[in-house]
Image 1 (cartoon, helix red, strand yellow):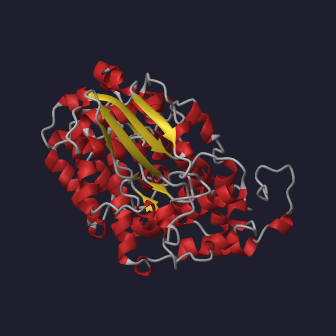
Image 2 (cartoon, rainbow, N blue to C red):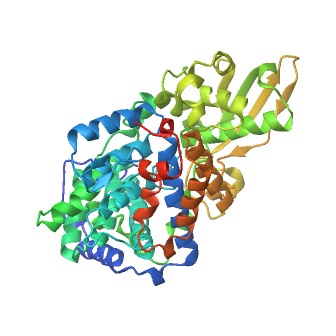
Image 3 (spheres, rainbow, N blue to C red):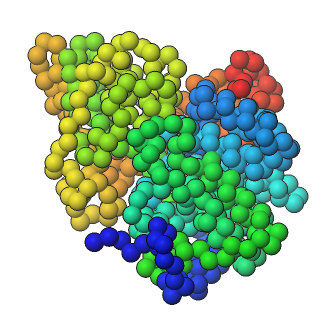
Length: 492
């Protein structure tokens, strides 16, 4: 039976809406206080900031970053904010757009179950961009964290609601724009009425891009989070000036408004929030983890491999199976990343960009990789070993890998799931793993270890910061020069 739809329907009826629910959601978001938030939720939010900044650092060598920096310099003059992490001055809107696009350029940012997408890639760039508009210029760590929690919690429910009420997949920008408007409404001190208009503007102008288009034709469009960050800030600024846009169906539609009933009771940041270990689409993660595991466990050298066969769920086979010619194709394909991971034992920006894409050894191994659908791992069946547990309604995100060596011996691996995904049966990453990922991404682009450690400390102890802009400022060129970094570490 088709879902009862509104946003892809030609019809619209006010009887579908519960305006009281919309106002309740907005009031919850505006009235949330630091003391209302459980310590574990605050901790997850601090980790999310660190992880998102690390992803943006990891994207600094990508072509998209050079293009975005050039575009912003030409199109968004200003001095309210800066682009990550070139330090070019721009307007707040320019920074939200640029830093969202840059973060979205590397597929290592956080994700949330039920949303089929990403929140932090828009919320956190937008949040830092918004700080430049604050009267008095400073926002404390506690206030910053509280507004981020409100944005994430509403945003994750918006993403869920959108997928429950529509028949196709839209990019994350379609719903994370609403989350960004929530952060900005709090930070810029909008009234309840203004915020109702802000979320309505963000929902209406949010990029309802067809995400499967980018899966099938990978380009720099990615998941629309740059536009989500831009639209969310724009929505709050317009609403503050009196621009109207009230009536946000993602919040108010009766058939989905129940998703907001548990705000402040169930915290999606600690239940459905997921970090990515590999710089590739979520669907490819189990096959990569399984390949690395088999190779390591059996001490197989890549040059000794005759074939790699990954048995996985159907959705994963929808990823590109050709040889990529750029990083966007590499991040949305499956054969090449498996081969690259077989050689390096990891998959970060260096493995999906630049010279790695022309490495003849990796390209030759990629041609020996085969993806097969395991009919027991279907969307309808889910993960057979997690039935009855507190898991998201999702595909069986599993792969099991067979590696055959040139001497004719075949090694069969155990079932591999998405690393770091607690709802897929894996342990969530500890602070040391989130920190390790950040340190690795930062060092890859030439940031000094001492400086990276100071940013880790600032993020994980954010509640002690009187001005959270010092976190962003620490990674800008001026600060890095003070730490004795060479000119070659600067980004375009």
